[in-house]
Image (cartoon, rainbow, N blue to C red; front, side, top):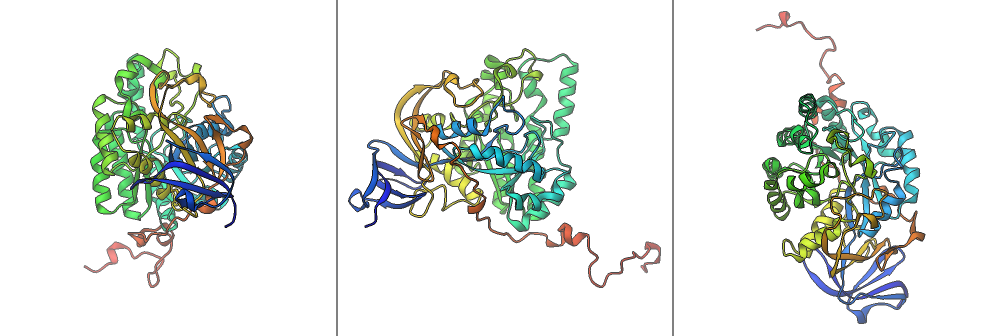
Length: 486
């Protein structure tokens, strides 16, 4: 029997269906065997993991590493270090950097910055009126997917028009490419914010008043209609409101290919926390009233919401603590704290460890065309593994975050359940709770392993390529209506 690089023994291996005691053998970047200890090949090194759980590494499809453009907030090196220490082995990074990831030149800058990443990554390209003609070019250049900021957020990128959304969906549908949508109605947000500022509102809850749930409801409904019409794949980012869940349930029932993420902050925080923490809690969509928390948990449990992401959005502490809520930047770090927060809820009985694996690894792997290579502990898959101790207790501290952004609403929160080791393609990027600094640059793009199936569009006659061509047998000059016989 050939020797392997590493055998992990004594752990419980977790899938969405079961938890079984098993050893795992790793050769190079892949898992080569999962089974009884006695069946494992000889190994160059062994790791005893008695009492621990082996989870597929988490896949966070929503992070902002701020690089290029805002290195005082975060860099790829610090952001990916936070991911590694949070049990996250793959991230998808957002395009609202400076410059935005909407041209090949901007993409090349981001790819260069990503060379320092500890973890594997995808890159969302910018979907807007100015980029809709370059979507295929950006795909060829290396983006994995796209992001449309239908609601305004950090970077103040203009929302794509409905015409551009339709045209872009028509382009991407036959390619099988999924588009992430920040689903809030920009017109509602901007008008409300102007009125609130004119009235002198600067308090923390003014931000919520400017972004009512109806803005999310309307935007989700609109993009679902366009995605259903074209057959495009759709992903709703950072779902925050109980009131729009019915739209997602109905769309899924009709067969629309829509996936949905929510974040720990929408499950665990509400306006009571906002009143205490002020601008630290400002993000988009906003933290809402407590009545939204449980319905979002219920939607995770019944599959209406597919996955957990973090919207990791770091800023400098002074950018989050200004007295005027409108002057506080939106977002906070989250990629490092997501797993301890969610494992704590598992320990409280709110969900099972199998549920968590489905939300954190399996569902995102399937949504982004990675399942089989990532999102599973099985022979042939990448050895992307988070080894967790469900019994370990601690208190989250913003000062110990790997992120440059040392300010978090989770600061001081007691948790139970931590990742102790993180492996990315067979290499330790965190070991015994410590970042393996020599692993910087180990991460690579997932572009080469994506397997996005090509769907059949629902309305082929409406694709832009067909619209711009005169059908055979139809004269190019229209007949005046007055000449048409009744």
